[in-house]
Length: 221
Image (cartoon, rainbow, N blue to C red; front, side, top):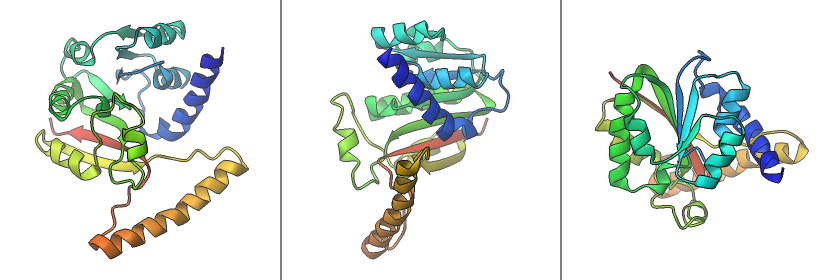
């Protein structure tokens, strides 16, 4: 019950933060790699998406996701993705996934995703942000983390695969009460300080300062 409550709380946040990125077509094919307990898929299901599926290596997490009546299997994300027909996926999700694989595997993953997504498909990903002054607390907070990326490093990787558009976003603070509203307002002021430091030290502003960041990528096909 506690886990179900945590997943449901997570679902509400994910719906608030990411529903604007989801396909307008509720019948679109969406694949979640490293889906864990299925929080993202659960959010999609509650929004009315039907053609959703996921894969994770954790037996216990997959069992729980299946208990939510989600189409989730236990296995290797690369093998799972390879079995899907080319040009058939409308959205690939890697939420807290790519930091768990090495750089060579990220190149391999990108090549596969480029083949599998449809012409108008997108890849949405959430991971630690090495631009953040505090990113080490996230990167080293989990011993299974391999690497942290920045928008610059992601752009350079995607350039090898003829990306059409690559957009980056800070992680959202969900406002659901006075406490979260105060956090939201204070963060706006703190960002000004970080921008000032960037201008003084390197002469430019990087704009993405949260500990984690989001990218949304489409490819020329």
